[in-house]
Amino acid sequence: MPPEPIPPELIDTVLNYVDDRRTLKACTVVCRSFCALAQKRLFSSFTLLPPSLPHVAPPPQDLATFLVNSPHIPFHVRRLHIVCPHYENWVGAILQCLALFTRLTSLLIDCRYLSKDTHSWESFYPDTVTALRSIAALPSMRTLLLYAVDLDVALQLFPPRVRRLVLYRPCFDVNIGLALDAQYSGREDSIPKLELDSLELQLDSLHEPAADLFFARFIDVARLRHLHVAYPESEYGECPPQVHAVHHTVDLQHLHITARTFDVQNDTRVLDISHLQKLHVVKLTVPVDADIVFDSVYSVVETVLRCIVIPGPVRHVIIDLALSEFSGHSELPLIRSLAHFAEQLAPLLHSWVDQHFMPTVSIWVHFQNGYVGNIGGPVRKAVLDEVGDLGIDVNVEAFGDARDALK
Image (cartoon, rainbow, N blue to C red; front, top):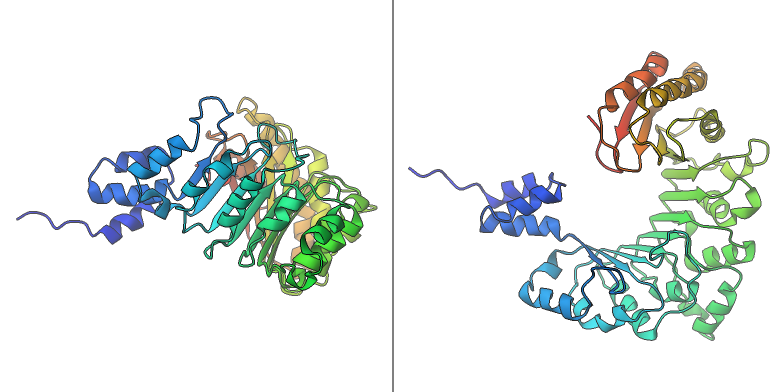
């Protein structure tokens, strides 16, 4: 008697746990049912690159041919990433192809191009803006990520249904008033007001009037549930949008702060979160441009953690040490520096226990260069040896990237 076929629902459930693209590609040649389900995972995220990059086929011909031969692929795509330098009009030229992606929930427009530090884009071709606006306006769109996009373009892309907005080094400053007047002259009531659940701000210096205008006219900050703010410098005056967002939220449940350094004497008001009575999770990411954890990293951690209201609603604290320079050749110095970091952290955690404040604490060691090795175990041991017996629940994880914990 032949065996019963495996229900496709079960195969789909199993493949949902597979993130490795090589494995998913192998699944496409197993059988027809495996192919359809694996393609759904493989093409859930789709990236379009400009033809000026080396070894990139020139759109729209290549993309159109691909979509004609595989008309089912656009229905699988949920996240679309477009690398879009302002001086090229190739995005506008493929508008007809983009119209096939009707089930998108997330759009990332990346104008950094070849340099992550480049953000002074001046203008876009009208056809490019039209194409981008048509995608952002899809009824299914919920997440919009804008990397180094000019203000005048960003204003035209904000879809009213978006629930998560990420602004990475946007190019808007005091000219925001001029842009608003130009676009909404005589139609102030039509200015979109985003009712976001999640906002991420990774900004450079933004003048105070521009910050006030942006938040007052576009974002209902009070209703935010999740907020991620990155402080590029330690000076209060250089981070007004971040400060504004933190201070004007009311129902915030998850606060994520990225900071390299803080001036303990001057930055207390930047981190005032005493009014957040619904805050459950505080996550702190500290970028470490080295292969060990220096004492200055602990000073940043201590500055932020001492702003948590005790006792208070916070139930989970995450400390994410993001190492960008670790090569795998200096494991012992890193482990020793982490042990010293945990030794410095121990008195603060012990004071929480004494005050009957006992959130779960997660310490993440995040290797941003994708390092994968056998360091996970020693890292956990080095940290837990110092803070594992304090009477507070401490978890330690080592990551090779943003998702996968090392074994």
